[in-house]
Length: 422
Image (cartoon, one colour):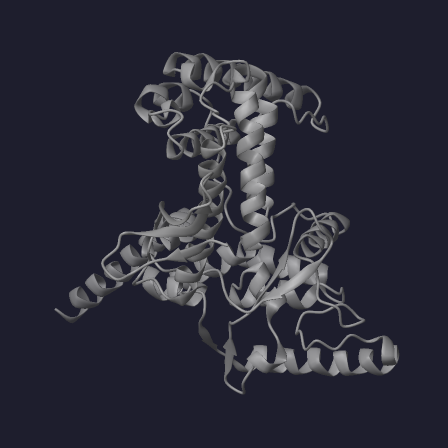
């Protein structure tokens, strides 16, 4: 059994295990895993790094033993298709151990199988060059053009084998991730998918989509009317008024609500390849763990939700699953995140409203707060962001121009007041 060790002053974790050679001599082998030791990142980061080092260490232990026994598998001569199978298998094993959501891995696998391997799969890993990438990206852009024409003629047509314009960078990033994996294992020495300057002209030649603005105040009002009385009303209300993440609103428990605060402590997670839903006693990051003041409106609303749950408990009797969740189905069971999104989209369709992603309600709250405070720091603290750049780039950027216009109006009012007093 291997052991991950890390001491003060070391840069990376090492993996130690005992190996018995042909002469029946046991020796302690120590292999550097390359996983950095996050001394100043907190307990959660340290635990995750140890688990990652343990996974990588076990792989290094297998390779070490295979080399000593003459059965070492060298992937340097693999084609991209062959290496992709090895890469995806290793990523799945790592995520199963760490119990991480597999949505991102499912997307990466989809990008590789649909848009990378059909074009580049027969090329050897060591022979892949920037010329291959340029030709492949040019072909992908042509596929995007063809898809755009099909959608223009038949708006309801579905063809997942052709990419969207907005997916090109994600597809290139998926290939770059696989090549980085190969570099870590010293099968190749250069990641040709990260030469952004070479491919910048190709990627900038595609039509740029209009920014998807978050819903306005009136649009959010119509959305809240559409979900009124539905079982998903509570999570949607928490997102629309308090800007909580979907997982945060679903993970909120009654014990996390005090007379004057909402304590964001838990999240609800669903594995993409499973129907099981489970609660994590942590948040997306340490900055997401926050205490939000509870205003009178939300306090009264949650009191009504609690009274409704009490009635449901009497109705269902012993069949009621009382896990203490604020957002729960009529029988008390927690919601699966994707089910809430599905029902939200269905509610918008039935009321003839534009289809808005559920997560955009959080953006709407961010824009509303920024227009009132002009402070990205305050908005970021409320939403649970660490760097200010995240708030500005992904949440308030579309409305900055409107907010700056409001600042100009305030300055104008001050100038007129001075002129009147002069």
